Amino acid sequence: MPMATYASIRELQMNATRVLRDALAQSDGQAVITSRGKPVALLVPIDPSEVDELRQAVRARRLRRAVEQLRTEARAAGTSEMPMAEINAIIAGSRTARGVAPES
Image (cartoon, rainbow, N blue to C red; front, top):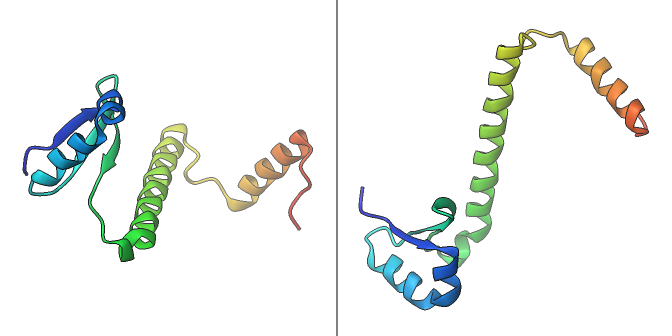
């Protein structure tokens, strides 16, 4: 894997052109943007026709990661085998407590 270009948010604010030029000079054209030394964003070159497809791919990946996390937490809590009726009752109780109308 090629060496990534890293830049802080401050560097990006101060000299976006240089950060982008340095990233594009890499074989993958990517730059990792950091805040306080931790990655917070990834700049990647895209074809304008791919914008919607790439945004959907990112959303799908985030959803898969959230579902994996929920499943892990459910197994750890011993609730992974909870019946759907019980789940629905908990959801309904939570909605009632918040004053949200139940779904019909």
